[in-house]
Length: 136
Image (tube, rainbow, N blue to C red):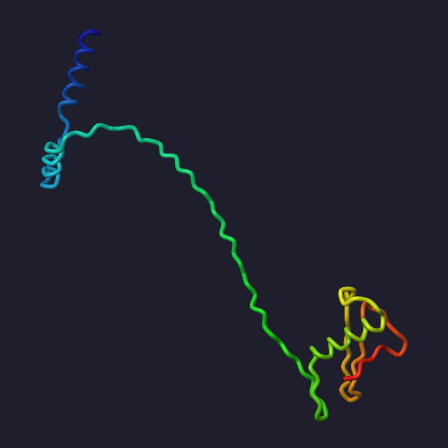
């Protein structure tokens, strides 16, 4: 009996395998099949590894500052004073008074009083009783 069951199962699986459906071919699939037959079969070639070295170059950005020439003037009671001239006169007076060089100046404060036609100054925080004064 066991032989008959095995045979029946085998026949049953064979009939199921024979009843496979085949897809319907359309015109597109016919042309693809025809083109595939005409074209020679390509061999699969292994992809070659390409090693490329990328060099990073950094461009130095040069930012050139355009120097703007500035002139500041103080006008009072019909008189005009250039602050560049006042600054130069203060430096000369300080160097003549102290005997030091212009490169010794670290900090300079200038107070312009046009009603007195004078400028008072403090250099490097050295305060003098009565203040230092330059006539304009």
